Image (cartoon, rainbow, N blue to C red):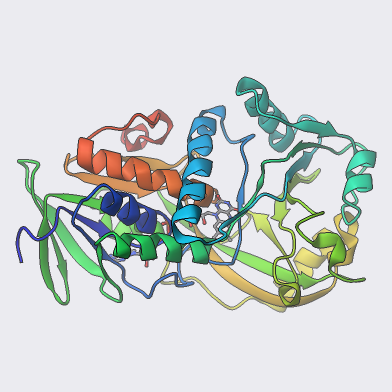
Length: 380
Ligand SMILES: Cc1cc2nc3c(=O)[nH]c(=O)nc-3n(C[C@H](O)[C@H](O)[C@H](O)COP(=O)(O)OP(=O)(O)OC[C@H]3O[C@@H](n4cnc5c(N)ncnc54)[C@H](O)[C@@H]3O)c2cc1C
C-alpha cells in the first residue's frame, strides 16, 4: 500500500475534517482516519451551535485568524450550498472591568472592529429576555453569531470526498511512526498499515494517546442545556436575539444562543466550570442537580429560561494551562503537524485551522501567526 497517499489525517472531527478538505482542495492524495462515524457526538464538535465572534477577549492576536475563518466558512458554504454560519449578532456582557467586556473592547479597538457599547438599560430594551444588573454593560458586535458544528463537519467531509480524499470511518489509528529523514510516515490500524509523506493529527480529547509527546492537556466534561422558555420562544429567535457570553459578578461565565429549531428550545451552558475526566471516563449522564444549578443561575439573569429542560448532553473540552491552542509542526518530526485548538473556544477557527494544517504539512510553514500556539511554551 505504500506511496498511495501524500498525507494521512488522523481524526476527522472539527479540525481534521477541515484539514482533509483543504488538503484535497490543493490536489493532495489524502487518507483520513476517524475512529467513530462522521460528525459523531462523542468528542467536542456536536450540539448544533458554536459561537463565532471577532472582538476576542482571550487575546487580540486571534483576530486576524478570525477574519480569515469567516472567509473560509463562507467558502465552504458556497461550495456545498449549505447554510453553516448564522450572524445573529453577539453580546459580551459583564462588569466594565471583567475580562469578557474589557478584553473584547481591547481587541475591537486594536483591530478597528465595528462594535457598540450598551448599558444595562439598553441591553434590556433591545433584548428583553436578558435582565442584567444595573452595573452590567456589554459590547455588541453585529458580525458575531454561530456555526453549526455537525453540519459543517459533514460539509467539509463531503467536499473532501468530492475532491478525491479517501476517508475511513470506524477505523482508529492505533499508532504511527515517522522517519527521521523527514519524508515518510506510517500509520497502523486494525485493518492495516498506511504510508504517506506527511501526517496531520487532529485528535481532540484523545491527543494524549496519539501525539507521541507529552503536553500538559486536561480534558474537561461540559454540559449543554436546552430550555423551553416560559411565555414562548419568539423573543429568542435569531432575527432578534444574539449569541452572548455573560461573565457574572462571581466571575462565572455562561453563554447561550438564539433558538434554532423551535421544538429544540434555547441552548445555554457554563463556560469551563466542568469536572476533569478523559474521553474514556466521562460520565455522559446529566444529573437533575446539574439542571437545577443551571436554572438557579438563569433565574435572575434570563428569568424565562428558568424553565423545563428539554434536553441536556455532554461534550469535551481539551484545555492547555494558558487556554491558548496548540497548532504546530510536531517537535520531533517535521513531516507531522499537530492541532489541539480547543480550550473550549476552538470551533469557530476550524475553517482556518484546516488551512493552517494544510500549509504546515505541504510547505512546512504558514503565513498565519502561530506564536501563541507553540507547544514549546510548555516544554521548558
Ligand atoms: C460544550 C462545548 C461548547 C463549545 N462551544 C464553543 C463555541 O461556542 N465556540 C467555539 O469556537 N468553540 C466552542 N467549543 C470548542 C470547540 O467545539 C472545540 O475546540 C472543537 O470542537 C475541537 O475540535 P477537534 O477537531 O479538536 O476535536 P473533535 O471534533 O472531537 O475531533 C477529534 C476527532 O479525532 C478522532 N480521533 C481521536 N483519536 C483518534 C485516533 N487514534 N484515530 C482516529 N480518530 C481519532 C475523534 O474520534 C474525533 O472525531 C465548545 C466545545 C464544547 C464541548
